[in-house]
Amino acid sequence: MSDVDLSIIIPARNNKAKNASIIKMIADETRQLNVEFIVIDLNSTDGGVLDALNTIKTGNLKGSVIQCGNSTVSSALNTGIHKAQGKYITFVYPARLYKNYINEYIKVAEEKQAEFVFAVPSSNEENHKEIIPEGILGTDIVVRLIRSSIYMDFTAVLFRRDFLVNNSILFYEECTLGYAEAFIYNCLLHNPLTAYIDMEIKRDYVNSLNNGSNAGTTNNCFERFDAMVKIFDHAKSLYKNDTVLLDAFEYQKLPAVLINCIDKLLDEGFNKTSIRKLLKNKGYEDYLKISSATSDNLKKKIVSWKFMPWLYR
Image (cartoon, rainbow, N blue to C red; front, top):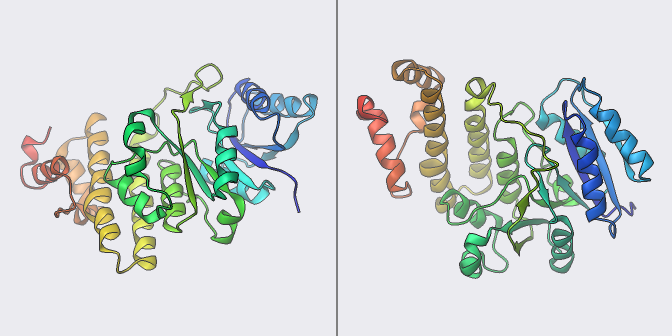
């Protein structure tokens, strides 16, 4: 049996020297833990992966660099899951990096014997005991996420590895946008033993990779929606009688994500006629439904888009 406490999986594509600084920062923060670093290289050409490997070797750290070719980040993260030997797994995204949270996550996970750990932002501190009761089911967290009564950063979470493996929970490899969100929802649908931390996690802008580019957003903006449709289908197969959960997906989550895609296309300069034709051809317009489970603001947007598109935005 492995003696590794935590596997830290880092996807890397032309992250330059940031790979090394991220590993050094996390290694300093987790000195009391037995940590392994798994850097998944996505066909980098800038030498940053060599820096990461040298940092692991010179720092006498446990870890490896795996070449994953020109695949998606989702595929790279799945490779990391298969390679991991730690009791727990976390994913570190170089473009959205946080600091000084891992030790607290591990501590709570051990105390609660949790399979999934996340943080409650400070804005919810006063109400967190009411919002997230002890022993809450993952499906209930999903509903609250959809209704925006709680917030979770999908890039700063911790999983027990055997929970992911035993339930065959993986990222959707074809998804390049919204893959972390879909992964978390999939995890929660399997009702992990959940624990949360009453803390505000802080971004690390010094060691983060600066990635302000939105290139490709238009081309893959519907991938997040397609992933959520898969999650919805999975929820229906697991909980066909849970009307609260299924209605939250069907009448809030899916139409909200689709409206978000429409707004992005409009921002990119696409005209409304072209977008409506695209939605019809893909069969997406059937998902723009409303019910009592739909928020008032979303209802207004859906009604406007479907029946008065000339007034939309």
